[in-house]
Image (cartoon, rainbow, N blue to C red; front, side, top):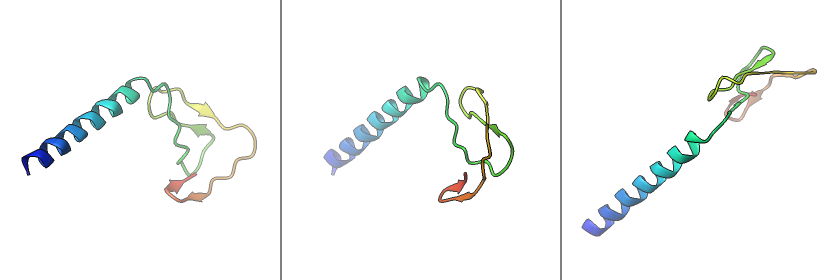
Length: 65
């Protein structure tokens, strides 16, 4: 039982460390889940964008898009 707990704690620690390493190097993330507007919000670094052309907002599988 102790062995299983040690393995689970180790896996959790490694996965959190890897996740933080990727997040620290992330420059921009535009989820495109707004449901209106012409601006695309960057949730990481504030590098917002603007939609060019005729985009249509629709309901997505995980929110809007």
